Length: 288
Image 1 (spheres, one colour):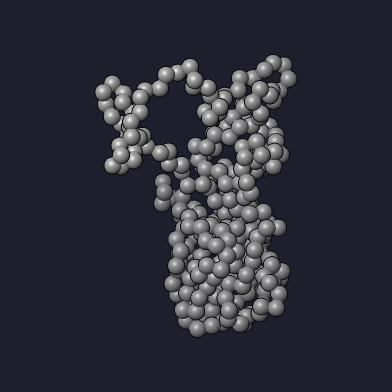
Image 2 (cartoon, one colour):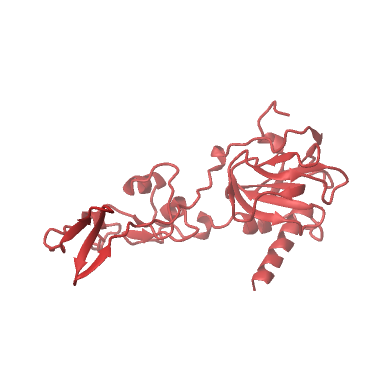
Protein backbone atom coordinates (compact mmCIF):
# COMPACT_ATOMS: atom_id res chain seq x y z
CA UNK A 1 0.00 0.00 0.00
CA UNK A 2 2.86 2.38 0.89
CA UNK A 3 4.45 1.86 -2.51
CA UNK A 4 1.12 2.47 -4.26
CA UNK A 5 0.61 5.73 -2.35
CA UNK A 6 4.14 6.90 -3.17
CA UNK A 7 3.62 6.08 -6.83
CA UNK A 8 0.33 7.99 -6.90
CA UNK A 9 2.02 10.96 -5.22
CA UNK A 10 4.86 11.02 -7.75
CA UNK A 11 2.46 10.78 -10.71
CA UNK A 12 0.43 13.69 -9.33
CA UNK A 13 3.56 15.81 -8.77
CA UNK A 14 4.79 14.93 -12.25
CA UNK A 15 1.54 16.13 -13.80
CA UNK A 16 1.68 19.34 -11.82
CA UNK A 17 5.29 20.25 -12.48
CA UNK A 18 5.78 19.04 -16.05
CA UNK A 19 2.35 19.06 -17.59
CA UNK A 20 3.24 15.76 -19.33
CA UNK A 21 0.00 13.98 -20.11
CA UNK A 22 -1.89 16.79 -18.38
CA UNK A 23 -1.73 19.56 -20.94
CA UNK A 24 -5.52 19.85 -21.13
CA UNK A 25 -5.87 20.32 -17.36
CA UNK A 26 -5.64 23.77 -15.84
CA UNK A 27 -7.04 22.59 -12.51
CA UNK A 28 -4.53 23.14 -9.70
CA UNK A 29 -6.41 20.93 -7.27
CA UNK A 30 -3.93 17.98 -7.46
CA UNK A 31 -1.11 20.24 -6.21
CA UNK A 32 -3.22 21.44 -3.33
CA UNK A 33 -4.14 17.90 -2.38
CA UNK A 34 -0.53 16.75 -2.51
CA UNK A 35 1.23 19.62 -0.82
CA UNK A 36 -1.09 21.78 1.28
CA UNK A 37 -2.43 19.20 3.74
CA UNK A 38 -5.40 19.84 6.00
CA UNK A 39 -6.76 23.35 6.31
CA UNK A 40 -9.88 24.92 7.79
CA UNK A 41 -11.69 23.96 4.58
CA UNK A 42 -11.47 20.32 5.68
CA UNK A 43 -13.36 21.00 8.91
CA UNK A 44 -16.84 22.09 9.91
CA UNK A 45 -17.16 25.33 11.85
CA UNK A 46 -18.39 24.98 15.45
CA UNK A 47 -18.05 21.18 15.29
CA UNK A 48 -16.24 21.06 18.66
CA UNK A 49 -18.77 21.46 21.46
CA UNK A 50 -16.84 20.20 24.48
CA UNK A 51 -15.05 22.26 27.08
CA UNK A 52 -11.63 20.75 26.26
CA UNK A 53 -9.91 19.27 23.23
CA UNK A 54 -6.90 16.93 22.97
CA UNK A 55 -4.52 17.95 20.17
CA UNK A 56 -3.99 15.37 17.42
CA UNK A 57 -1.12 15.17 14.94
CA UNK A 58 -1.73 17.57 12.08
CA UNK A 59 -3.80 20.00 14.15
CA UNK A 60 -3.02 23.71 14.27
CA UNK A 61 -4.39 26.24 16.73
CA UNK A 62 -6.11 27.93 13.80
CA UNK A 63 -8.02 24.78 12.74
CA UNK A 64 -9.01 24.04 16.34
CA UNK A 65 -10.25 27.61 16.83
CA UNK A 66 -12.27 27.34 13.60
CA UNK A 67 -13.89 24.08 14.73
CA UNK A 68 -14.57 25.52 18.18
CA UNK A 69 -16.03 28.73 16.70
CA UNK A 70 -13.46 30.83 18.58
CA UNK A 71 -11.08 33.60 17.63
CA UNK A 72 -7.60 32.07 17.55
CA UNK A 73 -6.27 34.86 19.77
CA UNK A 74 -8.95 34.18 22.38
CA UNK A 75 -8.13 30.47 22.29
CA UNK A 76 -4.41 31.27 22.68
CA UNK A 77 -5.07 33.54 25.68
CA UNK A 78 -7.36 30.94 27.26
CA UNK A 79 -4.49 28.42 27.13
CA UNK A 80 -1.70 30.93 27.84
CA UNK A 81 -0.06 30.32 24.44
CA UNK A 82 2.29 32.91 23.00
CA UNK A 83 2.84 33.62 19.32
CA UNK A 84 3.60 31.50 17.21
CA UNK A 85 1.10 29.29 19.11
CA UNK A 86 3.10 26.02 19.28
CA UNK A 87 1.03 22.99 20.24
CA UNK A 88 1.85 19.27 20.44
CA UNK A 89 -0.03 15.97 20.06
CA UNK A 90 -1.67 14.87 23.31
CA UNK A 91 -1.85 18.42 24.69
CA UNK A 92 -5.21 19.26 26.25
CA UNK A 93 -6.59 22.67 25.30
CA UNK A 94 -9.37 24.48 27.13
CA UNK A 95 -12.13 25.67 24.81
CA UNK A 96 -13.97 27.76 27.42
CA UNK A 97 -13.41 29.36 30.77
CA UNK A 98 -14.13 27.26 33.83
CA UNK A 99 -17.81 27.33 34.70
CA UNK A 100 -18.83 28.89 31.36
CA UNK A 101 -21.33 27.26 29.03
CA UNK A 102 -20.75 27.33 25.28
CA UNK A 103 -24.35 26.51 24.37
CA UNK A 104 -27.67 27.66 25.84
CA UNK A 105 -30.07 25.10 27.29
CA UNK A 106 -28.14 23.82 30.28
CA UNK A 107 -24.71 23.73 31.87
CA UNK A 108 -21.95 21.56 30.49
CA UNK A 109 -19.56 19.58 32.59
CA UNK A 110 -16.16 21.23 32.76
CA UNK A 111 -13.05 19.20 33.28
CA UNK A 112 -10.98 20.95 35.91
CA UNK A 113 -7.30 21.36 35.01
CA UNK A 114 -5.01 19.20 37.10
CA UNK A 115 -3.14 22.17 38.54
CA UNK A 116 -6.36 23.58 40.02
CA UNK A 117 -7.52 20.42 41.81
CA UNK A 118 -7.48 20.68 45.60
CA UNK A 119 -5.49 17.80 47.05
CA UNK A 120 -5.61 19.07 50.62
CA UNK A 121 -8.10 16.39 51.67
CA UNK A 122 -5.89 13.58 50.37
CA UNK A 123 -3.08 12.39 52.54
CA UNK A 124 0.13 12.02 50.56
CA UNK A 125 2.57 9.19 51.29
CA UNK A 126 5.74 10.18 53.10
CA UNK A 127 8.65 11.39 50.95
CA UNK A 128 12.38 11.07 51.53
CA UNK A 129 15.34 12.59 49.75
CA UNK A 130 18.51 10.71 48.88
CA UNK A 131 21.27 13.12 49.86
CA UNK A 132 23.73 11.47 47.48
CA UNK A 133 21.59 11.86 44.36
CA UNK A 134 19.19 14.58 45.49
CA UNK A 135 16.34 12.46 44.05
CA UNK A 136 12.95 12.27 45.71
CA UNK A 137 11.47 8.89 46.64
CA UNK A 138 7.92 7.94 47.62
CA UNK A 139 7.38 4.98 49.92
CA UNK A 140 4.34 3.07 48.63
CA UNK A 141 3.74 -0.37 50.20
CA UNK A 142 7.41 -0.57 51.19
CA UNK A 143 8.52 -0.02 47.58
CA UNK A 144 10.72 2.93 46.70
CA UNK A 145 9.99 4.53 43.33
CA UNK A 146 11.91 7.39 41.83
CA UNK A 147 9.58 10.16 40.69
CA UNK A 148 10.12 10.77 36.98
CA UNK A 149 9.64 14.17 35.33
CA UNK A 150 7.06 14.42 32.58
CA UNK A 151 8.54 14.52 29.10
CA UNK A 152 6.35 16.44 26.69
CA UNK A 153 6.33 15.58 22.97
CA UNK A 154 8.18 17.90 20.63
CA UNK A 155 5.89 20.79 19.65
CA UNK A 156 4.44 20.74 16.14
CA UNK A 157 6.02 23.15 13.68
CA UNK A 158 3.66 25.98 12.72
CA UNK A 159 3.57 27.14 9.12
CA UNK A 160 3.42 30.93 8.81
CA UNK A 161 0.64 32.97 7.24
CA UNK A 162 1.42 34.10 3.70
CA UNK A 163 2.08 37.68 4.83
CA UNK A 164 4.60 36.40 7.37
CA UNK A 165 6.76 34.36 4.97
CA UNK A 166 10.34 35.66 4.82
CA UNK A 167 11.85 35.14 1.35
CA UNK A 168 15.46 35.07 0.14
CA UNK A 169 17.16 34.18 -3.12
CA UNK A 170 17.85 30.44 -3.52
CA UNK A 171 21.24 30.98 -5.15
CA UNK A 172 23.92 33.63 -5.46
CA UNK A 173 24.56 32.75 -9.12
CA UNK A 174 23.14 35.02 -11.85
CA UNK A 175 19.74 34.41 -13.44
CA UNK A 176 20.22 33.03 -16.96
CA UNK A 177 16.56 32.48 -17.86
CA UNK A 178 13.51 34.43 -16.70
CA UNK A 179 9.96 33.37 -15.85
CA UNK A 180 7.51 33.30 -18.75
CA UNK A 181 3.71 33.25 -18.85
CA UNK A 182 3.57 31.63 -22.29
CA UNK A 183 2.24 28.09 -22.46
CA UNK A 184 5.63 26.58 -23.30
CA UNK A 185 7.63 29.18 -21.40
CA UNK A 186 9.85 28.79 -18.36
CA UNK A 187 7.73 28.36 -15.22
CA UNK A 188 10.43 29.64 -12.88
CA UNK A 189 13.89 31.19 -12.79
CA UNK A 190 17.06 29.43 -13.96
CA UNK A 191 20.33 30.26 -12.19
CA UNK A 192 23.69 29.56 -13.83
CA UNK A 193 26.63 28.57 -11.68
CA UNK A 194 29.35 26.06 -11.00
CA UNK A 195 28.79 22.47 -9.98
CA UNK A 196 28.25 22.08 -6.22
CA UNK A 197 27.45 25.76 -5.67
CA UNK A 198 25.10 25.99 -2.67
CA UNK A 199 21.32 25.97 -3.09
CA UNK A 200 19.37 27.66 -0.28
CA UNK A 201 15.82 27.36 1.01
CA UNK A 202 13.99 30.43 -0.28
CA UNK A 203 11.71 30.37 2.78
CA UNK A 204 11.20 28.29 5.90
CA UNK A 205 9.12 25.16 5.44
CA UNK A 206 8.83 21.40 5.29
CA UNK A 207 10.47 19.08 2.75
CA UNK A 208 7.58 17.27 1.04
CA UNK A 209 9.67 15.73 -1.76
CA UNK A 210 13.35 14.91 -2.16
CA UNK A 211 14.32 12.55 -4.97
CA UNK A 212 14.92 12.05 -8.68
CA UNK A 213 11.84 10.18 -9.88
CA UNK A 214 10.41 13.12 -11.85
CA UNK A 215 11.71 13.05 -15.41
CA UNK A 216 13.21 16.32 -16.58
CA UNK A 217 13.93 17.68 -13.10
CA UNK A 218 16.86 15.54 -11.99
CA UNK A 219 17.53 15.63 -8.26
CA UNK A 220 14.57 17.66 -7.04
CA UNK A 221 13.49 19.19 -3.72
CA UNK A 222 10.02 20.58 -3.03
CA UNK A 223 9.32 22.65 0.09
CA UNK A 224 5.90 23.46 1.51
CA UNK A 225 5.78 26.89 3.17
CA UNK A 226 2.09 27.06 4.11
CA UNK A 227 -1.30 26.14 2.68
CA UNK A 228 -0.72 28.53 -0.24
CA UNK A 229 2.93 28.33 -1.27
CA UNK A 230 5.44 25.67 -2.33
CA UNK A 231 8.85 26.04 -3.97
CA UNK A 232 10.79 23.62 -6.18
CA UNK A 233 14.58 23.27 -6.70
CA UNK A 234 15.67 21.12 -9.67
CA UNK A 235 18.80 19.63 -11.33
CA UNK A 236 20.86 19.40 -8.13
CA UNK A 237 24.01 17.31 -7.95
CA UNK A 238 23.38 16.39 -4.30
CA UNK A 239 20.42 16.65 -1.93
CA UNK A 240 21.24 17.65 1.66
CA UNK A 241 17.78 17.25 3.20
CA UNK A 242 15.26 14.44 3.54
CA UNK A 243 11.47 14.28 3.27
CA UNK A 244 9.50 15.47 6.32
CA UNK A 245 12.47 17.56 7.49
CA UNK A 246 11.88 21.17 8.53
CA UNK A 247 14.27 23.82 7.20
CA UNK A 248 14.77 27.51 7.91
CA UNK A 249 15.04 30.27 5.35
CA UNK A 250 18.62 30.39 4.03
CA UNK A 251 19.49 26.81 5.02
CA UNK A 252 21.64 25.04 2.43
CA UNK A 253 19.44 22.23 1.09
CA UNK A 254 21.33 21.04 -2.02
CA UNK A 255 24.34 21.41 -4.30
CA UNK A 256 23.83 22.85 -7.77
CA UNK A 257 24.26 20.35 -10.59
CA UNK A 258 23.24 19.28 -14.09
CA UNK A 259 21.07 16.20 -13.50
CA UNK A 260 18.52 16.03 -16.36
CA UNK A 261 19.82 19.35 -17.66
CA UNK A 262 22.02 20.53 -20.53
CA UNK A 263 24.30 22.47 -18.18
CA UNK A 264 24.91 23.15 -14.50
CA UNK A 265 22.01 25.26 -13.22
CA UNK A 266 19.30 25.61 -10.64
CA UNK A 267 15.72 25.66 -11.89
CA UNK A 268 13.62 27.37 -9.19
CA UNK A 269 9.81 27.60 -9.08
CA UNK A 270 7.28 29.27 -6.79
CA UNK A 271 3.71 27.99 -6.87
CA UNK A 272 0.70 29.72 -5.33
CA UNK A 273 -2.15 27.26 -4.71
CA UNK A 274 -0.71 25.05 -7.43
CA UNK A 275 -0.23 27.75 -10.07
CA UNK A 276 3.21 28.86 -11.25
CA UNK A 277 3.95 32.48 -10.36
CA UNK A 278 6.93 34.73 -11.07
CA UNK A 279 9.45 34.25 -8.23
CA UNK A 280 10.60 37.85 -8.65
CA UNK A 281 7.29 39.00 -7.15
CA UNK A 282 8.36 37.45 -3.83
CA UNK A 283 12.16 37.48 -3.71
CA UNK A 284 13.93 40.56 -2.30
CA UNK A 285 14.57 43.27 -4.86
CA UNK A 286 18.06 44.31 -5.86
CA UNK A 287 19.75 41.03 -4.89
CA UNK A 288 19.94 39.72 -8.47
